Image (cartoon, rainbow, N blue to C red):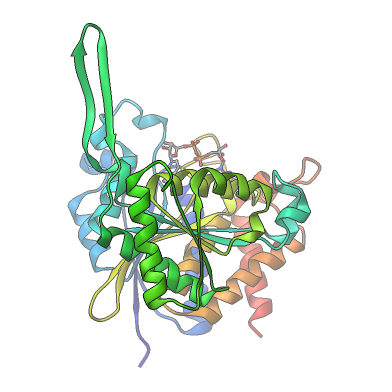
Length: 370
Ligand code: NAD
């Protein structure tokens, strides 16, 4: 019996709707040509949800997200909501949904498409063939640790505090995700911390080492200090396979790795929660980029990051590797044929619109589907 997959689409603000439209066409193609039935529902998140319901992550949307097999999210935010209080900002909607789904592992691949190696900030030979995966702990560490706040000390002095805190369980669950991914890839994992100056980093290192020795003896595990990792990423990024790190270092290192690949419009991500007894885990897939207010509504957005985020859903939530490979290949071929949206085009090229890029990818999927 064919299983129906439940997908919740949250297009959000700005270019979110434009890139989601192209992704929806890819999803529908799979229904038509591969017989995969996706039950698609939609809802609002971010600024548009605030406008409609007074909250960027309304209860009704969270309920749907909890019931879905996977959530696809476009982007949130924009200048329209710049004056809204922090608790109701569009970006808060994103944090709320991540928290409600318990998404503790954020996966960000940094893949350099051969056709785009010239767009990297590094020399082409350093990034050609690059394929690394950063696994960032997403709902712990210094962004959430208590105490946190700004205190008035009198005499015109203030004190700002954030607390870095991790427990064994928090480290273990994200480390296991990273080890499992390393097993499926090239069997190498680099765990990144600041164990030389932070005791929380020492705990991180010891716990990751313990899990590696006990359960993943075939994964080659290294430990690296975060500052060295930042240097190595721009010196010789191909030395890495999977990197696992905490929330703060992951935030910084995954952005640095992103720039190795050329454009924000190309970068997907996945955020995964814990699996229940049936093996089903909450998951949210979204491009790394934001709502791009400077180009919103102009049909200029590159839909590839959003489409590749759906490809990650096919891999990690739906276990449809064949279809994921097919879409991946279609994207690579389209780029090799010279199709470009404005963000990845050379100045002399006339760029494709968002829809025309969607058309090119769908055409290539038809060609590959013989
Ligand atoms: P941004 O990612 O929206 O845009 C940065 C630059 O990259 C812009 O010049 C934009 O035009 C370009 N760009 C981004 N995605 C593109 C695409 N798919 N195709 C072509 N060009 C693309 O970052 P920003 O300008 O710093 O933020 C804008 C808004 O988005 C802010 O409100 C911010 O808070 C929000 N934001 C949301 C998310 C998210 O939803 N996950 C992430 C980052 C920023």
